[in-house]
Each structure stands twice: as structure tokens, then as C-alpha cells.
Image (cartoon, rainbow, N blue to C red; front, side):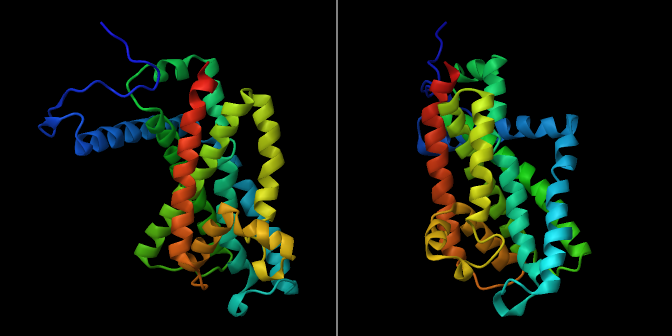
Length: 282
């Protein structure tokens, strides 16, 4: 019996489901997608056993909408595109924020799996490291969709008129998944460098609010000082918020550019996390 090296690709064999050699591009893609979906499903099953996180994480976005959103809507302190109510302008930003807060600490889970010996067992399977990371990243994305649904419902109760177009709602879900996947990969990359939960918590707390406040989640870029505008333009959260606003409330958006940036950032995040995974597993 032979064992695969950590993260090594599987040996060439027949793929009976397709009737093709296992090293053909179609068979490799199918096998990779199957393993990502399996890992994603394993992660999502954890929600069924403990839903406390979903409930507690709904408190902060509720406070942002109820207190910050309602107050600034009344005082008209922040200019909005087309004069839309500030609460409507804010809601997509808070939706992205809630997804960010879920994903940015996802690396803690992979450190826990390392300490419990689970990560070592996963690393000796023939599953590629990129598939391990992608499964966890997109699981974070689906978790964020649940959180996003809570924010959308709360904002609708407060009077925000979102689109009812099902295609735009599906695109909104895709944007949330991509944004969360990137930030969870960022967290797992930091975990590969920090190697401990305490360090990761400290770094995560240090970068979360700067990411949020340097984006366009709370205010348009045009009211920012020049140096902050420059930071906002390289902040993936800004592109996520821009796409969400365009899809949900119809403000002018650069959807093509937003999609390219989010997909590119996610691919880079998966690559970086996969490269750092062996360091974390040691």
C-alpha cells in the first residue's frame, strides 16, 4: 500500500463515471468540483448543530441599521447618489460588513482543526490543497448568505426597497459568496503565517475595522480625502459593496469591473492559502 504525500495529486486511474482517464482535464475538473462540494457540505453541516453564531452575529448589523442608519437618514449628513435615503444606501454596505465579519475569522477554525489533528488527516488524502481551501472558502460564503438574508429582511422591515428581480438576487448571492470566499482565504493565509489562534485574533481585529472604514460601505468615495480614496480603490470590500448597491437598489455600478476584481482576488486568496497550508499543518 502506498500513501500520497500531503496535498499531492491522485495517481492516474480511470474515472468510471466519465469513462475517461483520470488525468483528462474534464475528469480532473469533475473530481476537483466534487471534492470542493463535499468539503463545503461538511462545513455547512456544522451550522445545523450550532446556530448560535448566526443569531449572535445578526445583532451588530441590526444595530448599524437601527441606530446609525436611521439617525443619519434623518440628519442628511452624508450625500447619496440620486438623493436616495441614506438607510437604503447603507444597507448593502452593512450586508457586506456582516459577511466580512464572518469570513475574516475563519482561519481560527482551520487552526482548531490542526490542533485536533483533523488537518493532518486531510493533508494525507489525495485531495489537492486548493480544493481543501476552496471548500472552506465557499462554505464561508454560503454561511454569509444566511447572514445576508437576515440583513435584507431587517432592512426591508425598516422600509428599504430592494429589487425583486430573481436574477439580480442570484447575482447578489454570488457577490456575497465571492467576497466572503476572498476574506476567508485572507484569514486562512494569516493563519498560515500567525500559526496560533491568539495571534490570528489580534491581527483579525486589527484589520477588520480598517477594511470596513476604508471602503465605500458607509459613504461615497467622492467625500473621502484623496489618500482614503486611493486605499478604497484597492480594497476588495469596496467592489463588493459597489456590486451589491447596483444589484439591490439600482445605483450606478461597475458590475463588470466588480466581478473581475472579486474573482481575481478570490483566486489569488485560494492560491496563497494553499501555498501556506503545509506550513500551518506542520
